[in-house]
Length: 264
Picture 1 (cartoon, rainbow, N blue to C red):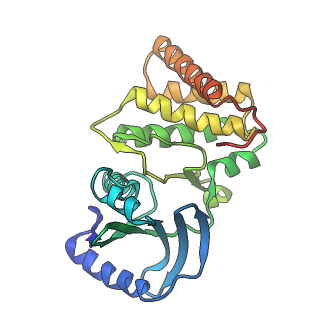
Picture 2: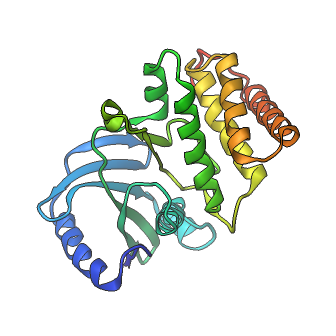
């Protein structure tokens, strides 16, 4: 079964699907990432260009049945939320389609086809190169996160590893571009969810703290920048920045890991 991204018309998807089906006839050997039941392959198509194929596998009869009936699979949520976010104008790599492979015993695997982004790095890597990060970088990052949240996105499992950065235009004065990825635990509501946004931001900040990318003063500067650009009025901005700091401390206590420990 194939799933169409809402950003593509039926006619466009028929053309794209024909090319994706050809990719499935060729064994994918260029695996660039593997973690448990997930893999990402890089494929080259003469028409579509470089494509990321994200494969989520459900091994074993019981697991396949579990994800076919009682539990909604994360891979399906990732496609549906991510593709809907893109259709609303969200900044994310283009979703080209999804293939769902079922058997008589349930859901075997889901394949997501996403346009590959060349020359990008994670937010962790990007900020680690800046010493220190410039205030205008925080402003562009804040606007990107706020813009995504105002489209209704609550990521749910956000981190600085789930934001890709294209900084190739900085040499000519263009700001970096931030792409949101990995929507397996996300939801897309109607409008801005302030509480969900603060939780997402705290999770991003927690990873930056964990990787020792930002010091406490820089973290406070990021929170203050986000609050200024997301809310009106000095009093509310101060309250919201404090909420971000409190949520970050909660994550630090819950995980109970020093900054140089391994993230669970």
